[in-house]
Image (cartoon, rainbow, N blue to C red; front, top):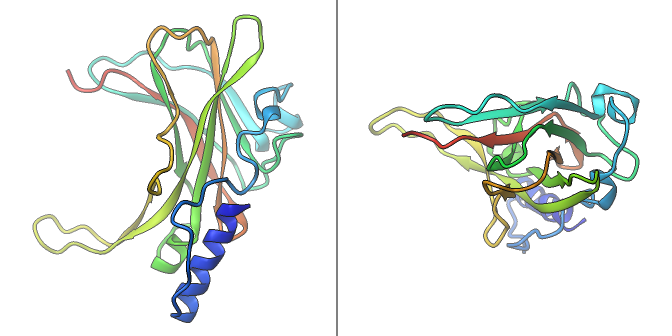
Length: 209
């Protein structure tokens, strides 16, 4: 619950204009991100509804570029037994392929500095072994940072971007040659206590040649 408290304090500061001592390292996530059951949610659709997650085959390996296999929650009502208030994006057929978990904000638009500063993404990555058991690879979270408009050189409008707080773990990833045959990226988007739509998945590829 530490992250939710941090976001709430930041919101209070932005609304009142008063200085508030906000923990620089939000640490633990808002919904016990990466609970053990997130890696063992069974059945598909998850919990009987595509609202809660999606399972799909990984895409073709790109040539001299990167690609993403991901799924987007149709709404913000996602939840799974033992993996409360988290969306599950499962990708199969990934044996040996280097990949990195990813998460992105979907809606509503983070169009003001106040809303941006009280919004966050959380994600964890799991891998499935050949015997069917799951192992947690890692987890992290991202918070909103407002970027003012740039008028010098290229004109870039003001916008909100999701960044890792200082000291927070990098996006969880797997190296080439790993033995997992499937992965799950589980997580959420939230804006001051209210769940929001989220896109979760994995990115892979060698990048530019």
